[in-house]
Length: 198
Image (cartoon, rainbow, N blue to C red; front, side, top):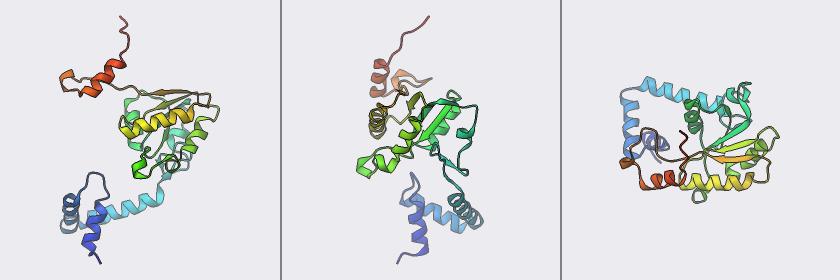
């Protein structure tokens, strides 16, 4: 039977980017130097797990049945942006360039990890996009193999609905220098080039 310390170390390994050595370092730090903050962390995690749930409309994390964004009368309800995670949604919000609503998948299709359409609850997205109010669905999944596969699957799934489906662009980042951009990104930027209006 593993010791309490081993159990704590293994529990900390569930965090992204935390390997065995990092988990061990965190566990020792919390137990040796910061027991009061360790208790606060434990209480905060327990409270969050009890209080936070998924928004009934967009599936993001919230403490209410419908999140503040979905409840806001200022949002454009005719445009729905599909993202993989709440973090992705927050990044888009920081741009202040989008005023519509969101749908958060809470993941992406990944058959090797056993994540398919059922695990992502894509039927809820289909219901939301087909509500008669939504006119455009913007696919803002990541440009990874899984994100691309998810975008293609969603495009086919949304095709029967009377909505426009678009995909966020990709290419050279603002302020980026060509010598530091990878070949795949540069090739995509060339393929998706736009006319220059003078």
